[in-house]
Image (cartoon, rainbow, N blue to C red):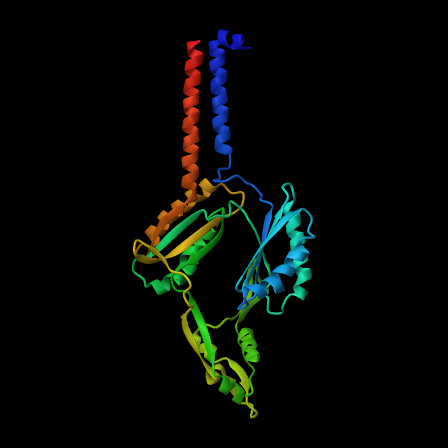
Length: 350
């Protein structure tokens, strides 16, 4: 076989270049990810029981969950940690276990044990580790003409819809800045004076703030969507919500028993870039999508948004997972090119 190729140099070179060509075409069709698509046989169950000491968390929450999960098929070992207000149970399965089926079994077991846990325990959250669930890109949003307090609302109304339309973007989250919140502060004495329960007040506010589709109306060859819009248009409209009536039949308004404030949530995170406070935008991609392709579309979009909204806000990419992937591929490609050159020289020499 070797002598056959050595005697036919032209044929050998043609075959060699065809293999290189097919390899290049195949490489361009491959999905490019930073980490391989590996399903780790591990599930983590997080259960919150607020304001409870670790020892009580251990006995009241962690132990019952451990005991019932030990009967799930394929379990290798169970690890747990009990800290103030939180129970963390990690179930590791044997390699080869169908993790999707194990996830269903774990959730069924948690539903069974729920009745034996304290009443105030929050519903357990099952977390499945995915190495490709890391953010594909993180963007810093800096103010350039509008107040930082208005940036979050501006992003949700004017910017995030653009990112949601990018093929492959699965989730967008924001951190830092100020998040608007409408607070309703009621006076307990006034409620009792008007014989209004706090839950009745909450229910009345909820029932007065709704909107839903009411069907379609045909007009010739057109079809019009009809929607009932009962959402509060302003803070004043919330204060004017009827929450009860007096014995004489006089309506009692929310503003009578309390006040409504248009303010911001308590800040739990602050983002900054180069000693300047900003808002961090974190983007995650859909499973199975090409990271490099999605990131390229996002970079193009960011350039367009900087031109469109540059007088108000500016976008700056902080981290981009596709850069690591492209660098890794470039290293592999360079090694492949060297191998091709060496092989060509050896074949030509002989």
